[in-house]
Image (cartoon, rainbow, N blue to C red; front, top):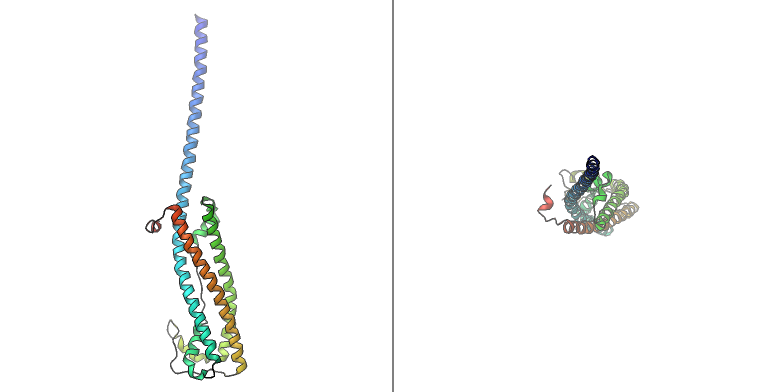
Amino acid sequence: MEVHAHTHTARKKWTHYFWEFLMLFLAVFCGFLAEYKLEHTIEHQREEQYMRSMVEDLKSDILMLEKNVTLRKNRLTMIDSLVDLLNSPQRNKYGNDIYFFARSSSPPVNIFPNDGTIQQLKSSGNLRLIRNSQIANSIMAYDQKMRGALFEMGDEVEVRSEYRQLARKLFNTNVFFEMIATDSVSRPVNNPQLYSSDAGLINEFIGQVQYVKRIHQAQLIRSEELLVQAKQLTIDIKKEYHLSEGTALEK
């Protein structure tokens, strides 16, 4: 009887340990699954927050690029008119227009992208959170083209500097000064004449104007391409993450 009881007790302890081990294993495993699911839920929430922020950045960029495109087109129109008037045998009659076009063509046309979200994604390594590879690639392609546009503005600064140096020799700078008495460039009304009528200087100035025109043309093309990319990327993100116009504003 004692031996039988001893055997029964040993068997009971073994099964007891087995079930304890099994329950502990299941508890640890379930905890792991819960933590894994929680981590992925948090990452998906962060991903959506990034995309909401990205949409807001793109909306700001779209407004900026639309203004840039309009301004570049206006500059190109003024540059063509300026060259036509300078080449006109009756240019002395169009002093108001010549001075206005010449002065209005020199201010910088800058772009300041709202790239906070892109920079955060890149610097923190959270670009991996974007599950849709097409959207991730589109974001990086947009960023690359934007950085290219900003880089090319270095050439624009140099070209404008040379343009202004020649303008100071060809035009009456006192008239230019009076034209910027306010925040905008005012058109003169007393038909001012060129400071110098030297044919060689006029030809050199027109040659430099052509470089300014080429810069505007190149940046116009790039801005239009960026505008198309920004709009399409906004559409893709909203569709992928089911963001309406209202929810995109929530943050």
